[in-house]
Image (cartoon, rainbow, N blue to C red):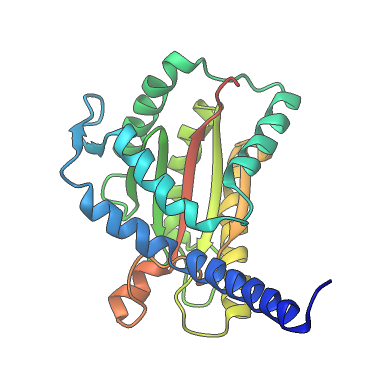
Length: 245
């Protein structure tokens, strides 16, 4: 038989758990940044790209530990699995496990060549490639139409993505914290759709693309400074290899 004070205790504990989960989600980016700083001494040189990268084992363990704080939030692996099933239906072939690293190495090298001096940064995270497109070079303030002088940059990205069709693409929009959460969420979604639509117009198969807006949820710098807010206003393309299960 439940007592009244037992019922209230359970309600309080449930509320506290939800609060912790929300705070964990909002602090994930800061956690990953801190981990990235701590891992700077565990890097190796990629022979194909001449870039330093954190070893897969160290990186995976660190990111896994941080992501563990997001218990109860939909896993990105679930989205990835759904996309894989769609790719199977579209007749797109998967990469054999042993050749994934080389496949992504060569793709990264081509992207670095084409995007040199464009303002787009390229980061390697294990077998994934992340293209960070700052909002100030991609969009005008409060706009979701791609700037005309940035169109050629997206064309270059699309050209490589068309060649490497066994690559899945997540297009994620992000904003700073100025303005309402609702407005920032809508703006981030609109910008993600704008970049995705351009890739599709250039010939990248829509089934390979997942579009998402995160609003102000995942800052990569402090929103207390002008430079920090500028860094947070961005669109990120995460390129993931489509591998055999």
